[in-house]
Amino acid sequence: RPSNRRHLRVSAAPWLSEDDVRKMLLLAGAQVVSKAKLPAHGQVLQVALAPLQQGGDGRAESHGERCQRGFCSLVKRTDDWFEVFAFHLDRVLGLNRSLPAVLRTFRSQVLPYRYISGVPRPAVWWDPDIQHLASRDNDQNSVPLSWVRYQKLLRSRCGIDTGLWAEPCVGIHHSEWGRLALFDFLLQVNDRLDRYCCGFSPDPTEPCVENMLQAKCGSSQDLQLVHILVRKADPSRLVFIDNSGRPHQSIDNLDFRLVEGVSEFPERAASVLQSGCLESLLLRSLYTDREFWESRGGADGLRPLIRSVERRGKVLLQHIRDKNLQLRRDQ
Image (cartoon, rainbow, N blue to C red; front, side, top):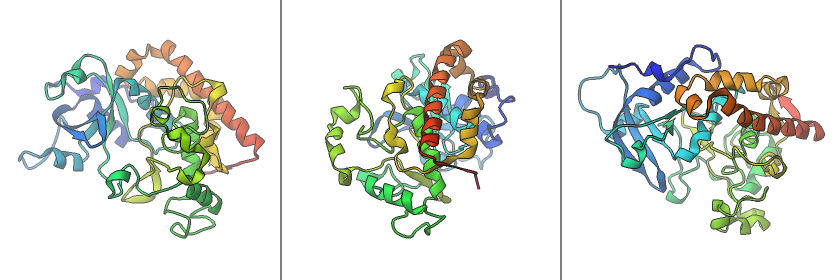
């Protein structure tokens, strides 16, 4: 049987942990054995994977059992390729909050035809430990959180000046929000902190325009955060999902609402942005994913994308200086 290591070149990226590499190998090359639709996620398919060397008791596992053992991925839309870039950015900056992702061309007959048409898709590791609210209307959160309460808990510095579960805190450590804000600003992911598109001028085709969410921007009381997720085993730390963001958002239309109220940012990530090394580090990291590298045109194709993110980083560093905000060392 062919080794799935042919899909990855992992020796030159020390910021990728052994666990990252193991999961990337699984995502890139393991055999697809079953599929399932996710409720309310019409364009995402959950697939169960069979690792090439898999121990076990020999009995056939159900789809759900494979997923609970960590052998599932979410196969996303072809347009979501930026989510793979986001995973590498997360690791290079030392944030370590997003789930492993690779780009993969699927050929399995288990999948519907449009998934095996020859166009690569992002495959993101499915984490069985993520905590979801029981409510069907709010299962994309681990905690319900409004914009108003979010701003209050930022001021309360949860886990530092206020207990993690003391009002208005929700069990998430204060330093997590600086990580999230920095990550979302660099990628221009508005889905978590500004799903109503209150902080920038959206394209008319954006869901927030089509679903008339922008109309709620005048009333802060109505605004909710989405995809605020934690693991059951580590509920004070965020997990970043759905990170495809906006690779082509112009520099004069950046969403500053993503950093509103955030008073401190992670020092290590800021130092990488200041160093001028982000391009070389990201190219080294993205090179590990052979399919992503080749489909995006190698270094020449990726440099404009990386430089766009670098420019956003300079804007964010200027924001930190102008507001005299703090840089916080990782604990």
